[in-house]
Length: 282
Ligand code: BGC
Image 1: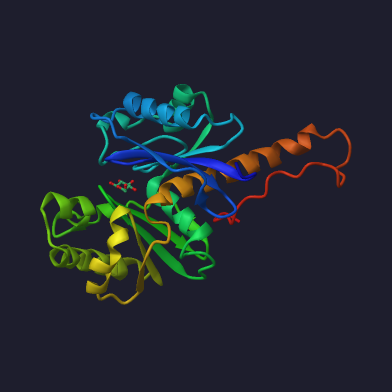
Image 2 (image 1 turned 90 degrees about the vertical axis):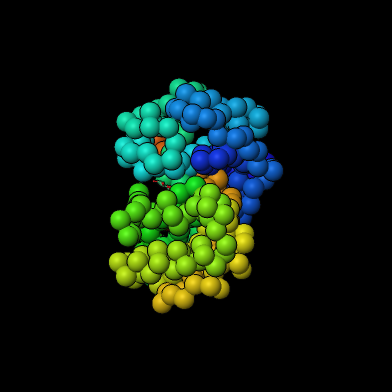
C-alpha cells in the first residue's frame, strides 16, 4: 500500500462503495467494492454496510477513513435528508460511524467530496476562478469553489424551478424514471444550468456523477455562457474526495498533537507530519 493512503467510502442512493486511495496520484489502489444501499436506508443499516465494506478491505487501523454522504453535514450531524431514510435527520453521522466501525472517520457531503477531488486531482486543479462541480445521480449535488476555497453544503440541487424541486426532474434518476431521451433530458439540464448561471455566474461548470461517463450524449446539447466540462474523476470522485479530506484531517490532528509531545526543541530529526495533498483549505 502506498505511504500516503486513505480510504474513501461513498454513500449513494443506490450503492455504497469504498476503496483505498493513493493520495499522491488520486488513483484507487484496489478495485472498489460496492454493496447495494439497504432499503430502508436507516442509520443502522447504512452504518452496518460501511462496517462491512471496511472489513472487506482488512484495513490497518492507522489508515484514515473518510465518508461522503448525500446530505448537508454540520459538525458531523445530518440536519436534513432528501433521498435516504428520514430517520437520518438529527443523527450525528461521524459518531454513528465511529460507534459502528470503531474508527474515527471524516464525514463530508458527497458533492463537496467531489469538489475536493476535482481540486486535488481533476479539472478544477489550480483554477483561479469560480467553479461549480455538479453531480448528477439520484439527486443533484453542488460544490462551489472559488479560488480554491469551498463553500460547503450548497444545496442548490433543490432550487425551485417552475414550482418544483429541480433535482426531481433534472437529476439522472429523473431521466431513468421517466425514460427520457438524451435530448429531452438535456432540455431540462439546459433550464437548470441556465438558472445556476443566472444566480452564481461561475467561470466553469464541472459535471460529475455516474452518468458523466456518457457526457458526449448530453454536454454537446447544452448551450451555456460558462465553459462546461465532464468531471475528471467521474464515479470515483466521492471516494477520492472523502479520502483526501480524511488524510488532511489526520495530518492536521497529527500536526496539532506534535508540539505537545515534544520535550526538546524540534530538530531535523523530528518526524514530520504527513504532507497533505493539495488542499482546498490552504
Ligand atoms: C442532497 C445533497 C447531495 C445531492 C447529491 C441531494 O438530494 O440534498 O446533499 O449532495 O443530493 O447526492
